[in-house]
Amino acid sequence: MRLLILGGTWYLGRAIGELALDMGWSVTTFNRGASAPDLAGVEAVRGDRERIEDLRRLARQGPWDAVIDTIGFVPKQVLNAATALGSVVGHYVFLSSVNAYTGWPNEALDDTSTLFACPPNANASFGVELGYAGQYGALKAGCERAVVSVIGAEQSAVLRPGVILGPREYVGRLTWWLGRAARGGRLLAPGPRSRPIQPVDVRDVAQFALHCAFSRVSGTYNVTAPMDHATFGDLVDSCVAVTRAGTEPVWVDSDWLTGQGMQQWTELPLWRTNPGVWKVDSRRAVAAGLRCRPLHETVVETWAWMNSGGTAITGDGEAGRAADHGLPPKRERELLLAWQQARQAGGKAGGPA
Image 1 (cartoon, rainbow, N blue to C red):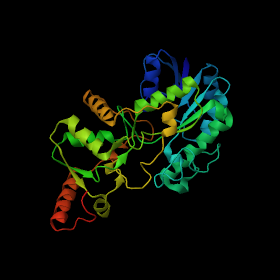
Image 2: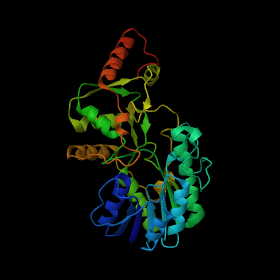
Image 3: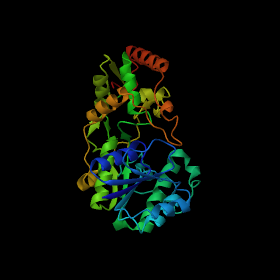
Image 4: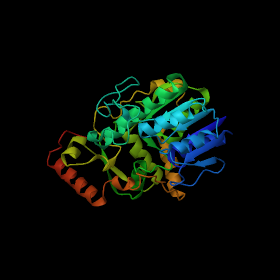
C-alpha cells in the first residue's frame, strides 16, 4: 500500500504516518519541513501547497493508492491539490471538522446536518465576518466541496472529527487537566460530573483514516466518541487517579460559573454548556469501522507521554494555543472560596452540582 500524507509531521498527521509504517505501508509525506522533524522511514517531499508548481512536482512522484489530507484549510488550496493529484491517487481522504456544521455547538448533529455555504474555490479571507470559529467552519466546508468536486463522492471520504485528544496534543486541553491534577489540592471541576463528553483519541482517528484509505470507504463521517462513551466526571477522575497527587475535585454548578464570567472552552478546557457541543452522532462512522478506546486509556497514555519528556509540537498558527487554556491558580482559589461562601449562605445558584 502506497500512501501520501499531506502534512505528516505532527499530531494527527504524525499518528497516521506512524501507524501506516507499522503496518508495512510505503509512506510519502508532503510539507514544508517547518513544523517538526520527519518520521523515520517516510519519503519526505518538500513543498508548499500554496504553490501549484510544487503540487505538480509532487504528483510526478506518484502514483499512490491513497492520499490523506490532514492540513487542508483553504478551499482554493485544497482544490488545487485535488486537481494536481486526482490522476495519481486511488482514493482521497480529507480531514474536516464538526465546525463545518452551522449548528455546532448549539444543535444536535448527524452526518446530514446543514453545512456552511462556502464555494470550493474560496480563498483564506472568505467568511471573516463570521468570527474565528465560524470562518474556520465555513472554510472547512468549502474544502470538503473542493475535494468532492474534483475527485468525486465515490472516490473520497470526508472525516469530521470533534475534539481530538492524546499524546502530542498541542492545544492544551487534556494536558492542562493532567497538569492541574498533578499540582494536588482542591480542584475546581465544572458540574455536573455526569455531563456526557465525546473526545476521540488521536490514534483512533488515525486508524479510521487509514481504514478509509485502505478499504476505499467513501462518504462523510462524524468522527467522535459515541454519545454515551464518557462523562466529565470520568475525565477528571482519570486525571486525578493517574497523577496520584491526592487531588480533591470540587464540583461547582455550571450556571454559577457562567455567572462569575468563566470563559467556557478555555479557562476550564472541554467545559461548554451549549446544548449540542457533545451531541454529535457518530454511529455511521462506527458502522464503517471507527473504534474508540476508553477515555481512561487516552488519559493514562497522554500522562505517560508528558512524563517521558514529551513536548507538544506546534505548527504555524498554533503556537501559543496551550497558553490560552487553563484556569490561573489564583482565580481558581478565589472561585472555590466564593462557591463555598455561596453555599454556606444558601445561595447555591442553581442547586447542587
